[in-house]
Length: 171
Image 1: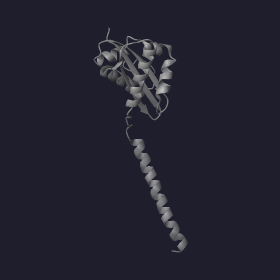
Image 2: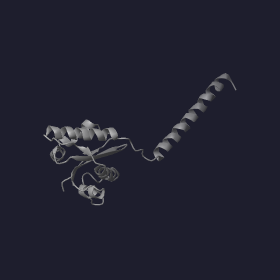
Image 3: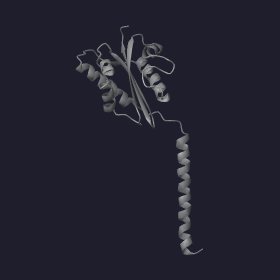
Image 4: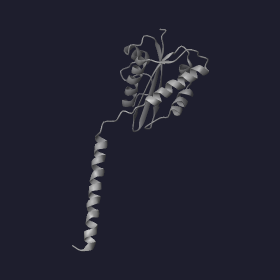
């Protein structure tokens, strides 16, 4: 073995090991179940922004987070994320926002806003802008009768879904 071939042998071996590591890592990533992101900050930002819009509309009451409405929002978020034919309020099983809220244990009247972004993430600004410039959604967010809210969001590599369910204790 001459000096030249001795120097290149470790390089070929290192390249083979690195190549194998890249292939194994890629296979593990592609085979892994999608991770659930912690979107608490985004969800809390939605609540804060809706509260601000309600204040600007003259609302004087508090906006509180309802676990039942959050559960209804979670159910619909998962449904929309996993069923790309959905793009609004009706679920794959035909349920409405009111149906899901009732099933989650919420007795009052509800409305819902849905955002679908064709990317890994959505910023709070993008989200509120999307809803703000939709007249129906803006009316829901500014409605002083909605004193409770539940927000849920989920992501995949190519899609983010955010659902907010607004509740009024009055039936």
